[in-house]
Amino acid sequence: MNTRRRFPKCRLPLPLTLLAAVLLAGCITLLALWCQPNALRVVLTHFKAQPLLIVLNALPIGLLLLMFTCLFRNVFFGAALVNFSVCALSIANRIKIEVRDEPVFPRDLGLLKEVGSAMTTYDIHFPWAAIAVVIVTTLLLVILGVFIGCKPFPIARLRGWLGSLLGAAASLAVLTGLIFTVYASNALYNSFRVSNAYYVPAVFNELGFPYCFTHHFTTYPVDKPHGFSKAQAEVWEKGSLAENQGKAVNVVMVMNEAFSDISDHAAFDYGQADDPLPNLHALQTDPHALTGHVVVPGFAGGTANTEFDVLTGIQTNALSATTTSALRVVNRDLDSLFRVYGADGYRTSFFHPGDDWFYNRENVYRWLGAEETVFADQMTDLEYKGRWVTDDYMADLVEQEFEETVAAGKKLFHYTTTIQNHMSYTADKYGEGYHYPAVPLKVSVSDQVRTMLEVYMEGARDADAMLGRLRDYFAGRSEPVVLVFFGDHLPYLGDNQLGYRELGFTEEPNWSELTSYETPYVIWANDAAAEALDWKNAVNDLDLQETVSASFLGAAVVELTGRETAWSAFLNSLRREAPVVQKEAYLLADGTITGAPEQALTDNILQWRQWSYYKLKYQEFEE
Image (cartoon, rainbow, N blue to C red; front, top):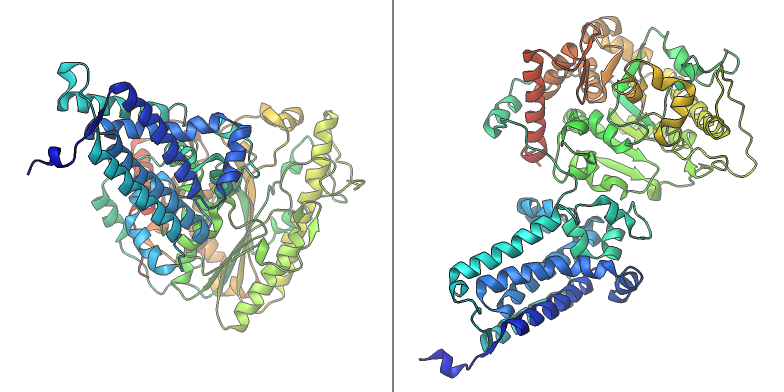
């Protein structure tokens, strides 16, 4: 049977084909936007105020449509495939936001196994009306393709498969180029007005799924290390594990927002009477305490990156040659301290008095293995000091968590990230008319810097008070407890390190390499824990240096409490060789700083990177 006679075909000339492609791309874009969680009229309102968003959303769809039009030699067949693919992603984005409060990213395309698991884990309400509309429009486009084709290309040499492949390749090349230039631009992405730039699902809803999805092809990268071998990493992971060595002590870790000891610097003139950090200083001479500094991933910011480094032993700064957000690269189960202690039957929990969607913590901590997560919306009777929940309130929650765990007959591994001393340090932070004690200085600073210091030190005093409160509370308990208290990063004191320059910090050796990333740490054991751990001998064996990378801190706590995994043993061995690895600066065990380590250390650091990549991408855990 001659199908051409049965289905007479209208053929569009090239100009009409291109016009049809433009119109179809626009329609597919609108349908994809309609499939988003929020109303289409809301999206179009944002687009009306920022017209460039129309182009940025439609352009990748149009280029994909051209590519498949060239391959199929039919604009409607190409539109059918693009319509189905783009709208299916948009619907998946809607479902993922509704179920996990997180949009679909390009990296999710490689997680089909995890998607299949999620389908059975969550109570998913499928938007059947949107699915039906997408299927019907796709079928209509296929039917149109049956009856309407395209006339041969005007240039005879390009009418065959060579022309089709060249046209498709050209369209793909243009799209790829745009992804790595225009769509990769953070400056452009951040220039658009949104209701909450830190709430990623809202950004997707307001800027349009096609644009945001395309932008995130180049965000949160994880580079594959040179020479990576999955098989070799599996051998490392299956290395000998010490069993049943863990001491039955509770572990409470508190990462305090912007906690630092900058007030110990020579530029300040504090005395014993007005010391803002009396509890930290007291613990520095406590026989049951280890104190020093951790070198964190970022300067004056990057709280979540420090969480990641401490909990996983993986370094944020080594994930990619470009800047990335560590918690944003996590999209599957990952090894962490929660899993180490959870495997010993501990109750594991994470508290943070912020929004659960910020840095995607709600999902990430589940992937890290935390048994319980509690965020601001789950906390009752929140106590604020100015804009943020107080450290004292969080200390109360930590104590409650400990008492509930003890009452349940279990041991506790707990991690809290506080928020009170978060920037900005402006005079109105704690409310109009709040009186800040003067900061005694030996140097002259601008009024702007003086205000920031006064506001910041008020928060530092409260942080130190939290440290003292927890120490006193656990000192009075008969249950063994190890308390780990440290800062996530130095405070932000103005653009271009303004406050640090005026105080004289930036003139000191190694400021940019190491000291600009240092915050204090305290590891303290109450009497019961000191006895259980044989504190003096345990500390001697631990050989914990005064200054260590944040990625080594968690492994050091694992060793201190009598535990060992192949990963923690490797990290502790590397720490003893090079206590600090910070980008291209290495602090060696003998105290020297180098940018060119010997080959043996270079090889060990490369193994660290390769093993980290395996954990992020391939390591599996039993349910």
